[in-house]
Image (cartoon, rainbow, N blue to C red):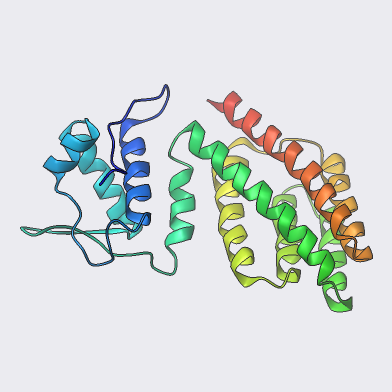
Length: 236
């Protein structure tokens, strides 16, 4: 069980959140198989060098997410990665502190760039029409409708990429970004600038230029991630 080493607490990082993250890494490493019992609270306390209430809180959180099952008088068991566990882990990432938030935004940005290139390669007339309609909606909708229209445009790109796994992963990530940042901090820039940021992405996909699509999406995501983190820092 080398994955479970003692924790060095980082500034601003809730200890129970760090324990949760360590347990997630441990469970996903293959050290424990679905249906098997994990180490006891006492053993985890000794392995991680934290107090028992912190371990208990982390186990409770992972139980709520569906990763663990606590059986009274028997112990705590790994339920395994169910169909929606990845989405739930993204949600957990938003409450794991600053590092988890930054990791989530970085992962989302990298996948958006990859998917934009795939969408350009897989483009066809119907997909381009759907993307154009989404872009037009972004331009013409009300301020209140804009966040949803923005997400719909990115979803249309993912629908066009031809990879259902990437599509579904990004759907969960975008929903968590929406819930964790935008709904709490509001808009991070003007409508005009936000809309114009997406136009080069569409035009590159429309031309079937995968390199240009990736470059345009990378520029967009770099600025978007920077603004979202700045907005969250100001809120805190």
